[in-house]
Length: 378
Image (cartoon, rainbow, N blue to C red; front, side, top):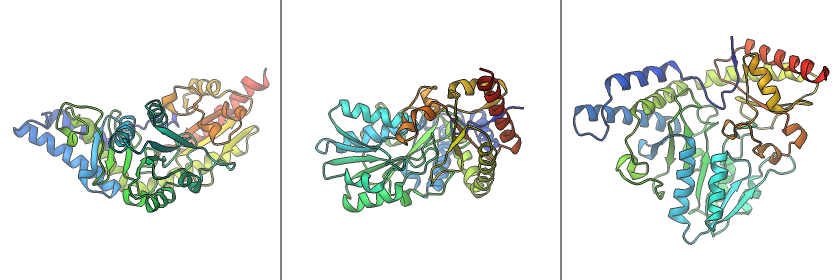
């Protein structure tokens, strides 16, 4: 039996998602923009899903724009805000530990002439909200800070940073990539004080290929795409009704069971920490404030990629970092002050409520076998 511990990369679609997608493909396959009954039925499915995502963020449905996933949501938020507000205010602020889709977007803004200020963690490996605020001024149009880091599980001080920034600079546009926190740690759009929030379907047991962007009322974005009236002209093109239906159903199911799932995942993570802590040459990276869904661990003497393939042969599946980097070093671990030697030996273990104690046992046994076969026999 496989031990799947790579849930930060993607999760298994839940039964509610599959049922909603199947029903949409079989029964409401009309184009939501069509004016006949089949079109209306499809539009109603999209509307219901929009309400389900909005309920999870405690916002109005009109604030939700469906996208193809978090990468598009992040790009729409960043380029859209820069296009709408960056004609005179040419400065943007972002943390140095963001997901690749945010980092690359800011790199592109820099090429377009924006001043990009990247805030690195302090000597304790933490993002200091005061340091973040200190770089924001009257010339700053946009600031981004993720909620949960996708490689270490560190929870960033979004609430404190954005509250202070908006109080001092009310016109500043704030953006949060909340993908790894959505329906895993409790928050609402209002609590984050974020004007723009990116979320994804396949991180919460929905299907791949669908996400959403929350946009606070009154905020303007320049579209990335043109050619249709869909999604308030922000994301033209025929909506994927099955993917959206599945996303909404998954969000509703995960919202209903969030407390129980978090309790179970916390227990699993604690058991994983207990077992790995007792092993020789295993170093756990545990931020003081962290999500229970992600655990970062370094196995001294083993390259992460080597260990990943060794474990995969035993049907134990983890990651060597962000799945989007395809195994390439992202620099995020180094930014968090993890030494190069340990960063190259670090794997990401990520949980869901479907994981079991058996999965943890398989992981620990796999790491021990790797140490024996790949280190001690050298």
